[in-house]
Image (cartoon, rainbow, N blue to C red; front, side):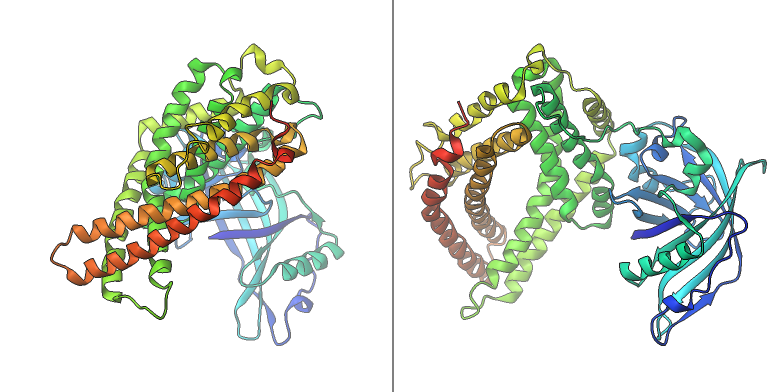
Length: 506
């Protein structure tokens, strides 16, 4: 669930205005009885969750009293996940969702927030709640009941309505004297300045006009670490639910890109630091890969089976193939779930947080980026263009040989993308051209793997003749795609090697 809301600061003299004007035609504003909410927040001693914009709380009276809220990167918008459970016993699933934030540190009560809430629901003609406006008088303290502070605030939370309604309500509140506040959760206000300090995970920033090579490396590391750890809780949710989505893909891409970037920047980073990190990133990418590959194959099966409406396939046989892939995906997601709960992964998270804070750089990293980085990108480029790359690629070469070129193209593109902020415009043109090369080689590889998969699954059931026929026809369609991609490759490669795209490389 995604929560989207706005907050407003008001004092004790503020009078909530009439909200009936914001309701749609035929709708109304419904006042709810006052409610007293008591929420107990858990965090680490150094408030790692609060500083990262997340929270874990138990709120009395809620049907699902335990709730984790996670930042999305957009102010006022958070992921919200709730589960049942008694006070004092946070559900293990929710504790695991914030693993990337607490990193194994104990969670304990840090504050109690008591709220007297007056809520108003903005409803449409049918009675559906479009938005909720709450007037909260908040007292903060501890479990013993001792109050340490108090404040009042308004919240407008979007339900079934749209952003325009949220803004209209905000306008009415502001016209009556409410001040648009920064999006600061109640418990963060209660905990004070310590909860608003910088998070442990350092975010990417803006590069200077003439950055050093080390500054570029640092920003690249921070960007990919942030992407990886931001998707950690979303992957956990999908793994535990038995389904995959783009979160697995994004986490896998971040693992691969960071590993690739550390390889590209080998002369700029200490090998004793980068080698173990690359090895662990390779392990993580491998764990994530099986689930992602199964997901891609299931999607491809549906598309390939429907590719020729005039030559339909046995839908029962297609379903049996999908069932086999679904079981493969389920097992792969279970393996992800196990890996993310392991001490090995927890150690990797710690290492990634430290890496984003201060990558271990060599003296050469102090040199200007514009002078140093092109030579580093030239290395994967030469591997791609050389005899073991495209220059030695036979149009009739085995699929594995083409896959090897695909991997070299991906490494080269990752290297080009890593240095984009610090080099000439030709790099951006080369990146776009390499993306097209990757698209062709990626479709080639996906089709080749799919053809082998369909035939392999059929071979596992030698007595299922309908399955054998269907798998064979699917494989033929995939091989047609392989031939088509091989025919397209020369033109895509020619565009990538034009001088205006590569002249910046030494």
